[in-house]
Length: 232
Image (tube, rainbow, N blue to C red; front, side):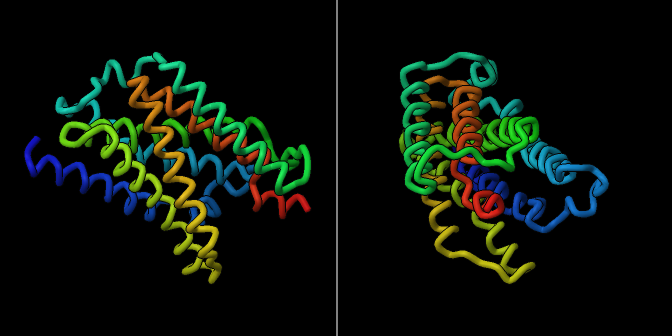
């Protein structure tokens, strides 16, 4: 792969972070969208639309670019490397459940969860983020670097995309939590590596997307600190 193609991929991964910083609902866009809807559905609807818009350029590049390690047919196929899939699935479940026991002192389910909303939200989040950072990022980076290096680089961009919202909240609301930001970035990087391992083994974006969805969903159900505070 030429130097220009390498720069193109790095540039688009950087654009993914900048583009998300522009359209993220941390700016409060959903407050002006269908505000009459109950149960904060306006926020969920904006979340669906914004993430799909965010992912569309990368879907186009995946389908049009022939210089990729995993073909589009493989990428969107429902095939799994069950050993890696179940191992990461188990590790994530154990991690969240142990964290729940430490934080809550026992079994706890978020009372603010509305399962229809949460399921649809995290299904979309898991798919589009895996499409961008594994289906595009890791897949394309693997053309000119080892699979491990590609996984580390794509995971770094995946972790970085979680940063802008903290500075947006600081700018808009004068609220900033450095420790929370650092914790989320480190966690996103580590789990990004795990998602990447599942993706590389399975050669399917659905395998890592399902794992990604599962982590986000059970974290929200059993561990979310912000919603814990709301519940109290």
